[in-house]
Image (cartoon, rainbow, N blue to C red; front, top):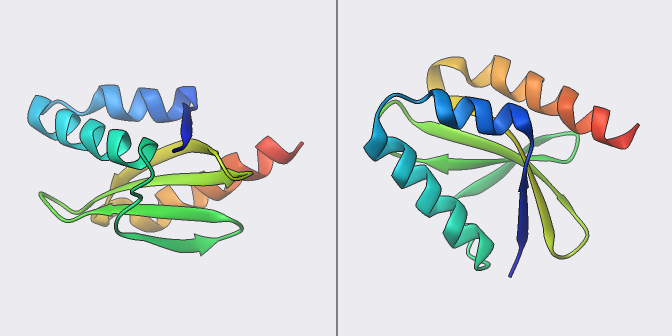
Length: 98
């Protein structure tokens, strides 16, 4: 089991998704992660991980793990904005260290 904390940047990104079905599907993915099933993830650098959802444009959610039970959701995007989204997530993760 994980405790998931969503940064305001992550909340803003998720809230801005216009399609309600997509928001619900991503929300279910977060619920699964909270129960301990992280699913399709990969490291993208500087301790940041990418949760991949293979539907629509290829949704991505970025997070860092702190300790054994805390996951901090940093942001998200899709395959078309992946490089910029990763850079933004890494910057946010670095700011958490300060």
